[in-house]
Length: 401
Image 1 (tube, rainbow, N blue to C red):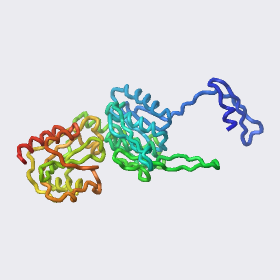
Image 2 (image 1 turned 90 degrees about the horizontal axis):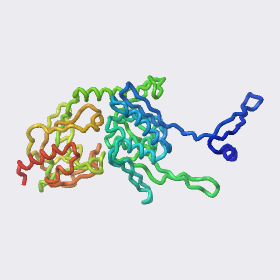
Image 3 (image 1 turned 135 degrees about the vertical axis):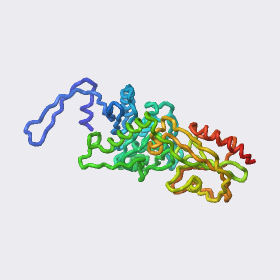
Image 4 (image 1 turned 180 degrees about the horizontal axis):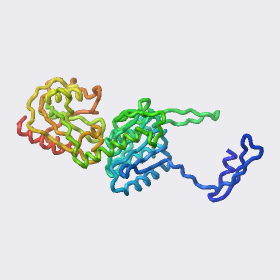
């Protein structure tokens, strides 16, 4: 500590440091000018004049400012189609920086929460309006070396459907620790709370699982080089999505939806587990190979709610279609579709309340409730409002009352 204090001094002043090295008889003297050294934690580049690459090595006190500057530079390119945020081998750092950096890519919604033994350790952090890349597609690269703050950012962007995660499962460090000094000059590191993603999942010892698993392929693999197959995969995806969007070649996903009514003709809706703040919807899903629409509807209903005891009232005529908003293109369904066209079924619930169980094997709903027909379009996400309004009119014609 005495040596460190001796080396400190005003910026611009000089200091001489004497260094003794093994094998040299005489010590070497170095004259050094004192400066404030900013550790650069962000590396950026433009790939093929189309893809913005941002590598974040750590979350230190300057990381968010550095990242903001690099984004501003890249955003000047008019041919930009999307971004890659590289968090591989990033061990983490400051929680405040993880929240700020997550907020760069979000318009709203929860980023992360902490829960501990005491009430003061229970906190939630939310994004503020203002996506700094203006809704462009975003891929986040992670691997087993991505930990702590890296997992908070990756998990938040995944849960909020803002980014596709590509690579390998992250490290799994989701604990908040405090250092408690001891009288013998030692200390105890105590876990006081844990981080939870917007989906209420804990990162601890589990990590964040990528949407697209791509393992390192080559023995000579190096990050951000020609041998980086994970980065190359992400670049190809972004450019491919852009070509499909430009040519309007992305198809609509074929799906089904279920209007489930109880004995009062109220409608079943579930609160989305990946966006628990404000997103409710009726059960819906895709159609598997070799099943018809009704079979798909019953399977999806059981998978999402546990419900089997139903009676079919009517299969509604025609297709119900919606397009994803621009900021979700390339993020849902692994970028294969631009929206959905669905067959909808009206069914009556015949079972008892304890048959309803949204805590299924692969849960999609955090909670559920029955609502009146008049509330239907009020609970829908904005890009499904037209479909829900159309469903309201169809249900009025059925005269269910």
